[in-house]
Image (cartoon, rainbow, N blue to C red):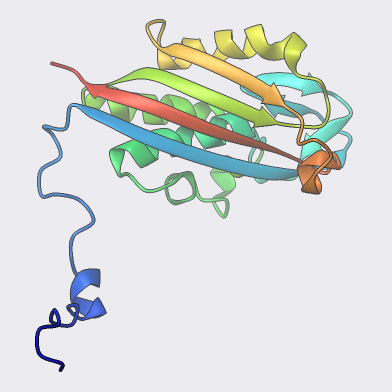
Amino acid sequence: MVQGLAPARKPVAAEAAAPASPASTSSIPFRVGHGYDIHRLQPGGKLVLGGVVVSEQLTAVAHSDGDVVIHALVDALLGAMGWGDIGELFPDTDPRWKGADSRLFLREVCDRLRAARQRVINADITILAEKPKLAPFRSQMLLELRALLGPECLLNIKAASNEGCDAVGRGEAVAAHVVVLLAAEA
Ligand code: MG
């Protein structure tokens, strides 16, 4: 080793062994989580976004009802808590979730949050879809989600096309991003 240079970094294996979370997380006052989901679309059936049927000419290819808004929201909440992801909690290999109404997943996670004394301060949702146009469904989605997250949660839904880019822009898929902020109850 050349004299004066910093010692080599510790081995990767030692870093990998480090815990992902501090030993105690109960005192964390605020938590941010991000969720993302995408599903392919196919003709027929019905498409559900944010708990609302937005099309009866399209459906998401999925094990459950394929509601990308709720899936991304659930993942954001789980991420904020360090609780893994939706696939671990509700595996798509489990026949119980075949065709399931995704509001069940959100209700279950909200129950767990309440038990952990966490409040959802706000959720900022971005839906990416070329079709159908979602503006007419936005207020109903807000009602559906607020019914699960609680009336005190500040919710925002933005809907955008993908400007013709990639599978979403070609109308072959629908996607959603969600960011949430949680606060520990006093
Ligand atoms: Mg999904």
